[in-house]
Length: 164
Image (cartoon, rainbow, N blue to C red; front, side, top):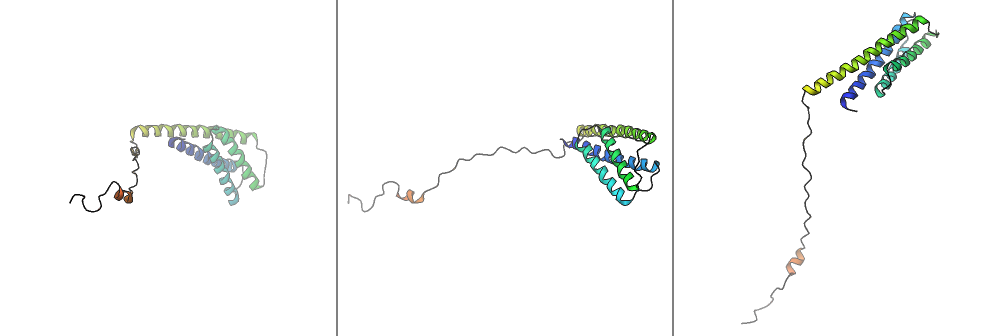
């Protein structure tokens, strides 16, 4: 995955997780739920983090991930308040509209990020171009100098000359 695609994937994951949590809290408040406890908020943050990680790591449709995030967020907040109930048609319609709008916004943000990154890639120079490294120079090994053999190599005259 290129750097640009990794950035777009992180953007998708962050936005999907944040929108999932925000819509869960808003729907809970509009549905008459009280203020969530600290433990419910911590569990909701963990849930939205998991939703964001899944959105960043896969190419599943954003709408499908948002639906799963809404279901998980609704379960977390309903279990905390102790009033687990089956959502009514108005709540389901509200969640469906919120998911559709959020999915469109996340996809538009992905496209916008790709557009900006492509424009920057065309305009800005490469910050650190790799240096060309010359190939390795092969050096033939030198045979070891045998000093003892060099002294005794050849015929060496020993003694006085023969004709005197």
